[in-house]
Figure (cartoon, rainbow, N blue to C red):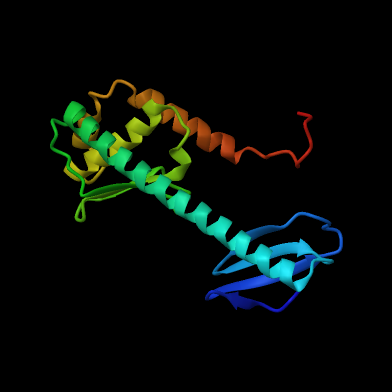
Amino acid sequence: MRPPGTVEGVPVEIRRSARRTRSVSAYREGDRTIVLIPARMSEAEERRWVGVMLEKLDAKDRDKERRATRGDAELAERAARLSAQYLGGKARPDSVRWVTNQNSRWGSCTPAEGTIRLSHRLQGMPEYVVDYVLLHELAHLLVPGHGPAFWRLLEAYSRTERARGYLEGVVAADRLPHPPDGDTTA
């Protein structure tokens, strides 16, 4: 392993391995990039591969950002449709976006700022579940708490109970003890 250096202002750490014979890989760890290369690789090959891997990681980051931006725009459009359909168009958030830092909540709303955030964990769940969580957060723009007035707003969405049951099942499944990796016995 070589001490960390910088390449074009990016902190890079090169890790050489005798077991690695041909492949080169890289990943981000905090603010630095780790590049794994074969021990036998020359300094010139190392420089070339570090450049190649930095370009690949940058492209991957740009692609991820584009997908997130597109996903947020689609989510905002979906929120507008749901508000129009179920809340008479009264709930008008200033921003609606996916976030990766919500692991104990499905969504959150800050009425004073008009912001709605949905957990990335909802992505891939059935559409009716995502719609329910989004509608739940939209309703908070109109009624802050979970009192009777809040639940009356959600009565129009026929899949509320089904979606809540689905989410409760996901939470319960996450709490079950998981067998060690590779153990397929029940």
